[in-house]
Image (cartoon, rainbow, N blue to C red; front, side, top):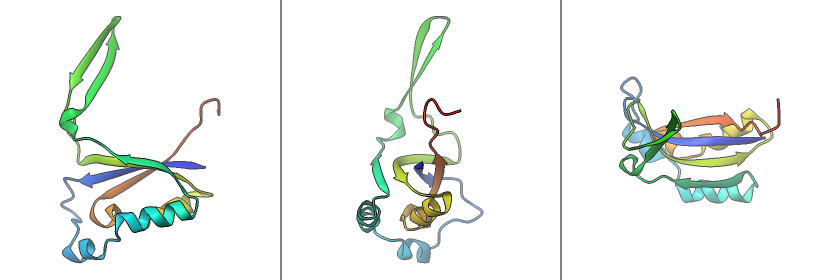
Length: 118
């Protein structure tokens, strides 16, 4: 099963902000990528350009409406994404745990739901 892993900065994490020890103990992203790639779990991923460069597209009443960013109004700012191939949710969590942003930000895992599946 494939999982989308959203890599986020938790901009309003006042309850459990990362400590300096968390930051110092965070693994290197290149080491994480090498391990996930070598194990066959890494499918693809990338960083995202800043929110100020984002666009929102809507069609209303037959008219295309395009809004310019930024759109970061919530407590999490999406910085990038990875797609993982995993046998289970537990395996996806294990792989996410080794990502540096699990130690400094927040990772959201969502199982992909392929088109055509009920």
